[in-house]
Amino acid sequence: MARLTPTAEITLGPFFPPRYVDTGANDLTVRDGRAARGERIELHGTVRQEGGAPLDNLVLEIWQADANGIFRDPRDPRHADADPGFAGWGRAATGKDGAYRFTTIRPGAYAMPEGSMRAPHVNVIVLFSGIMRHLQTVMFFAGETANATDPVLASVQPASLRERLVAPRDGAGYRFDIVLRGDGETPFFED
Amino acid sequence: MATVTLYGIGTLDEATQSARVIPGYRQTALRTPAMPLHRRPRTRSELTGPREQAGRLAQLGADIAGHGGRQAIGQLIHLRLEVVDEDGAPVGGTLVEMWQSNAAGRYIHPNDDDHAPVDPNFYGAARVLTDESGAIEIRTVKPGAYPVPDSNHWWRPPHIHFSVWGEVWLARLVTQMYFPGEPLNAEDRILNAVPDAAARAALVCRALPTSAGPANALVFEHRLVVRGRAATPAA
Image 1 (cartoon, rainbow over the protein chains, first blue to last red):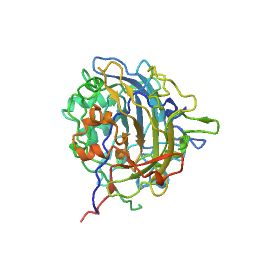
Image 2: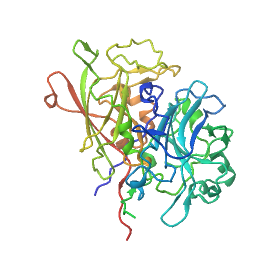
Image 3: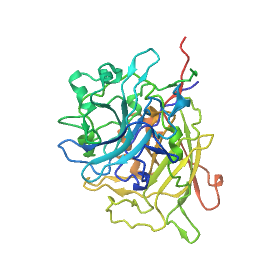
């Protein structure tokens, strides 16, 4: 079959409608009136550009497994057992101070078909004016022994950069600061 | 354990995708990573996606040109949008969000301080799911061009923004659609950041004959291709 070329990505621009960052879109712990199982956490941080200026109105989206490491998608072989109270997806926008916040649950690890493990992690997409093609990164959790063997974290080279993707515990949650470019730049993945 | 069909996400042809840093668009140089992007293995985590979550989000409808005595000002258009994957297969039930300026080039957004007037009958945003054939028809007004602040006379041509979820996480698409025959297209710093001429042309919608639509609206059609194709089973 003929293969079509994927449409070129173009920046989100500065005017993403505030209405699209719905009230509650950054809370993954309630779905259809049911509460998610697992450890409830606040996932928060700031997003900055080169030179350190915080970015206002930048959009983050996340996608993660539930507390048992199951994705709410029929392509996950354990899909039937997914937590009905957990959303899996969320969206948040930064404020003038560059800060964002998600309320979610700590995801579980899961075994890959060949037997190795994916450590608990949260997939993150960054969308904003001046970002022509959306940026992909992944947040991991400090203190997880599975981090040492996670194949995605291991793909970050040199290894000294990996700690930038491992969020430290901070009060009731985890702090994951994102630097788009420059000192302390966050590692991003090919799209 | 149930058998599942994986979805194939290949590598993008860079010539068909935008440059990341664009001369004359200064924010790109401050917000594009300087380090090389890391190549990771594809796992279940990136090859699943939030399709089942779309119902959580409030639908805003695809008819945004106004009603009754509250019609938006501008040229009324119908836009027939089709979302397909790289096989050409329709992507049904996927979330499409669109947003645009009004006919005078002004967005309803706290950060748009352009002098162009707000239209009280036009918010400029639609959020709908594609039908089983991957289609959506949007009733709106044609957006206006507008100058980019502090840019030395760069004007954005009329365009509509789209955000599409696609089948899986890696299929996420955020893009813009342009209109045929617009003089500003030839000099737009964003549209012309896509090197391949065919890929650029694919960002421009197509005007249909006036007979294609209702008596009071011009009709355009446009196709969005999200990444991914049915995976070939391993030999």
